[in-house]
Image 1: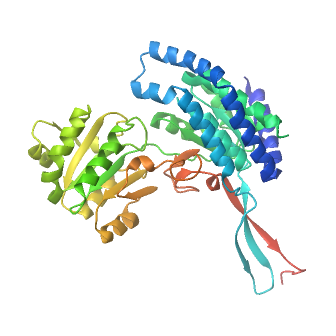
Image 2 (image 1 turned 120 degrees about the vertical axis):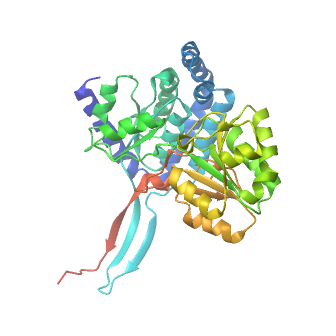
Image 3 (image 1 turned 30 degrees about the horizontal axis):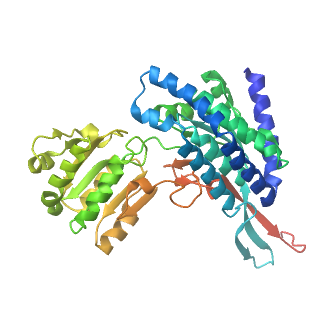
Length: 417
């Protein structure tokens, strides 16, 4: 694929986006139903393609967490289909008037949601993102150009092909879903120069990928570099609840960005809570790295370094620190965190509200696992990514975050004096 090919692909996506943006809800919903049905019908073909990718990955000796993100099973297909159907059932944000007011001169001023246009989606390993991103973009009236990682190239070709073909049955352009199926980085960098044709870049993957995209892109990039997520067990926490939530946040799926990486425990809870909690973690294969106070309470664990507080492990490794107060916990989170997801376990309503207000993260929870920082879990149908920058979205991104707002003004002959 040369420079002219890239520009042509981007032009076709732009035109498809204009057509899609003008389509009504019924037509988009019909396309989404077709996409869900075709995925289910073609599940054997998709899993066979994924088996080729999995075999290659195993031969390369990639980590188990990576294989977990790459694999497609019957359950994975069912989840993708359910996600598309849930997106289809959501309210269409396009055309919504979010505010309206009348000026003294009689002008009626409003704000209307509109599609962004063309989204360039760049991601690693997770082939389910191909389906989730496509569904969200179609529902929100955006064309999408998909660039998955080379490790999932066969899986992504199969899924994207099915989804693109499904648009034709709803009289929508198949170019609204396009896949870049070459591993050539120069091709990707050429797409990142198409700032007159592509409106937003959303990278999902490791920090190295996201920084490389941000460095080379002329197009606005929505990003999050790390998921350094915390849980703070307060002085008056329900320790049985804390045990359950903290175990889930670390162990249920450690290789994802909303898994807990650092556990903070109030000094008044630490002696009672930490021995049993760490014993449970150790039996589950979690390596503990603790501060000096943690090591005194539970001897024999590895000391935590300053670098550990900044580290996203994406593995069965956990940093633990005993703190003096909620103030120190919030200070630690805002210093070492990545603005992703943080939770407090507490029965203190005042502390809950302080945690909501003062923790500078895109998702903040009380008495719940960080693993709920996920568009599907939060009722968005699916998510196209998580933004830890505040322009223009913050947190899991669903349909509304894939729209902009324009001013619409109704007059009756007003002129400016």
